[in-house]
Length: 331
Image 1: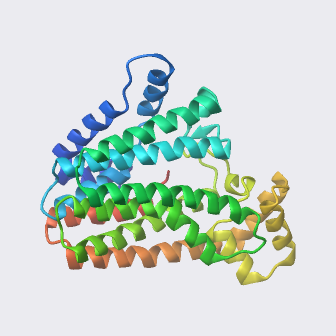
Image 2: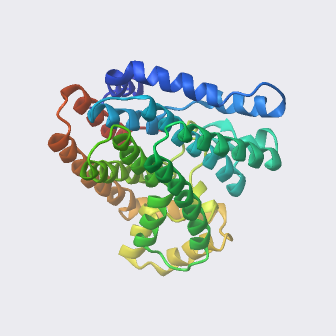
């Protein structure tokens, strides 16, 4: 499906759940609405940013594959997307980010104090909506997800001061920061339909693998200019982050000069010229190719899961388009 446009992919992905997706969107918009003041303006700013809603789409598809989307699924999906939104608002404060996907961040549009409080409000609303499920396992799962997201952010900050280039540490962090959200879509989506425990476990693993692929593709973006993404080439390095492509290039070449630059990345003392050199070094020494190979292997694992476990042809086609899009997307 490599020649499909974004709209083509999304049309295929959404096809089995159009009605359910509209109900989700109506609920989500309601949850992100306030009646007056700065909070109303900030929430409207975030609603306008929208997004592809990749995580709710995945949860709805998982629930549909296990018997059908119900009110528990919808409230859980809103709760998870609100938790995700709150974490992004707070992350932008921590990272001092001016933009998020090409649009001004809340902290840039208002200030850090407003952004933190808006994030807190959205987080509380997330807890409110997941409580509407009256499903103790789902409530516990979402609460645990919040812990994992925060832990991952702290681990990422700690990792800046650890002067080594560890692929294992990279995966540990992205499984907390990114893949945990996707994994929760699988487990909560299945739980909302009272699926068997083994189904909950297998869907969680499937969706976690999708989340790892999603983050690796995001990391590849950082090695190329792309205004749609809202960050310049090498922005991760400017924030002290070394991702999979450069970690591989450093560990496979043993280039002392580049290792010194990478250490300066971690010390937040690297120049723009040095970042450009490290980016080029990564490309020249197979870092991008290696990341693609990892994604390709994970994509095949996901495809096997769909073939073995998803028996509805339309949903199987939708989930296949989903994993294709994660790998092929351009922003």
